[in-house]
Length: 434
Image (cartoon, rainbow, N blue to C red):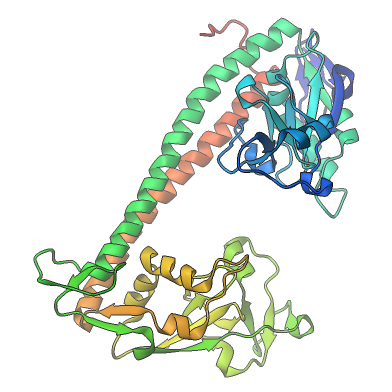
């Protein structure tokens, strides 16, 4: 073994070399967005890849891919892809990598992706992809991207990044071993992700059924007269939201009236950004001496009218943004938990989104929401349904969390396996590769 001279690696096999990426590439370039050339995207044609199409597991996901026509592809000749090119994301989710295979061609890329055209007599494409996502190169990229306010990686930085290079045949052996092992890991990750999807679907179906059909399958039913609801228990009331609640719209607070430090005169500012960020939100804003009209308590119910239309927010105390309605409900007619579950009915949300419109930013108005149907069992039945749903959802959430943790651990193991193999910490040359 010898010292690599790279801080995050330490010693490497004696016969391995270290070269800058630019020394084994014929070219390093990046793409361009066709709209800058006054070209429109088309329904079908040539794949046009963006960062979101490059997965963290070194694959190309075309589910949400855009397409360009052949004329645009010719104009973007600098970034047309060839078999064996290595793609590296250089903006947003920096440092993802993938090798371009024959079945993904023809294809092109936007400006957030770099393409390496390699010298095939020196390096094997999958070896470079594996090294790019290995811990040592990720550390290098992180150090390079923190230098600027906007995270991005320059082509010059990529070209000057050092990569470990064993002999070409050894690269191929290690890459083949990693292909086999990561395929097993990726298969398990895929199964776990599907399980999470199924658990979420079952959780939603349980909510939908309980708040519209109840818990007793033998109870007599009647037609609600509303297509998306269908039949409902005979003793349930069919009302409109205006019969059980009124709405308060939040307030857009000017930036100069927002504070970043709390005190006993200030309340947290509840915004879509803060809700989406959850525990990771480190820029909480506060409003001093707010109007009582835009203050909600933990037992209040907020509904996003725009920005995240139809999303329900509860258990928050603070000043709510203009993007939200506070639903002031008649507590003699409806329990909070039952109301929250009813609002989480996916069929109701579909109708809310239809009413909000199909513009770039859907916007739900008061009257449209208040005109929507709500079906109410007795308070005693609401309590039973809410208790049942809280228990079922707690079980589902626990299973989802455990499965997501397994996915996270598999991703970590995948990363460690690749990093160990491409830095020579694990010798796989004697492994039998199928």
